[in-house]
Image (cartoon, rainbow, N blue to C red; front, side):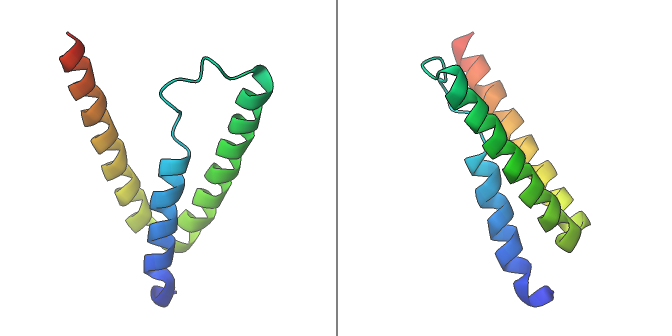
Length: 81
């Protein structure tokens, strides 16, 4: 499985980016919101499979991504205040 390590790492990064909520979803109707919810659940399932193959390495990478996103939100919030 070490041969495919970089593939699953890249896949995880791409999926996390694809599953982010858009900045403005106010113009979406209820059907579009439901389709996006289902899409995000499918992404979550795929990430779970990646985690089963990569284990703690992937979990640590996801924690790093979460910390980066929190920092971005804090910076944006500081800009508005």
